[in-house]
Image (cartoon, rainbow, N blue to C red; front, side, top):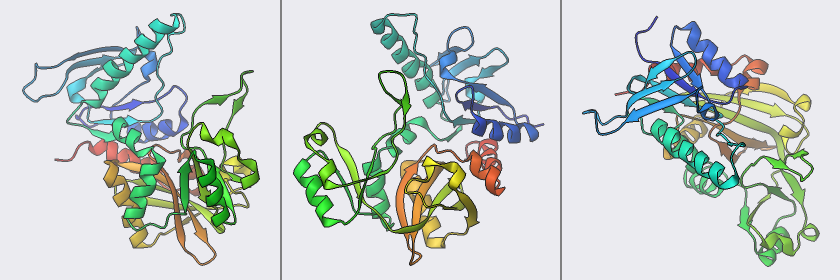
Length: 321
């Protein structure tokens, strides 16, 4: 049993991926405190003092029904899939005010712990989630990026489509998307043609990309120094649309590619991230996007790759000198 401080796992109640990492940490005797920001209230109490420590760190505690954790003792923060409270019993102005206080009070305190490791720091995640910035960084690092247009200019969009035989549309940011009747919707990567776009595209920017003639997709999970590359074979444009149609095979990436992906994470100050790439008939790799907090649990189940152990390694180690 280690005497070092706990790992704080910040996530929603039902998070099977976080469970895998927590199980690994428990087997190693690493203490864990798990909570979700939406638990704030009598199930989650925060007390943090500033200006009271020569180490310039918040001093105080987080208290859950099962743990009382000193803020200054947290060795690592695993920021997974947290949810923020809605305060549905309050009217809209009060609910909005209250949620903001949680984000900037609890969230801000968790962002401010200087002597622990973040996997990943939430503010770094936020920067890395912007696809235009991802694309620019990938291109600067020498990765092959498909021709891409982000625009709400109808004439420019049609001109881009005229340049490329096949074009696809992607959402710039995933959001919980529901119709007015409450039915949930998901925006997949979809083919699009010039006759399908009209003046409605001028309302907001959209991401259009030349379609790559791929033979397979790749999900690459980078965890610190470890790189797990999984080839995903299917006939789907967007493999997320039907997991039952997929087959998986671990592969080894070229060293140059591994270094470029690691450098991409380092640019954003991230300890981990999930990359999507595709492979062409010629064996060329095309970079598609980064999800700084992507899912990987099912890939370990399908391939046996020790991804949860790699996350546990980082979290157990804590901050490096």
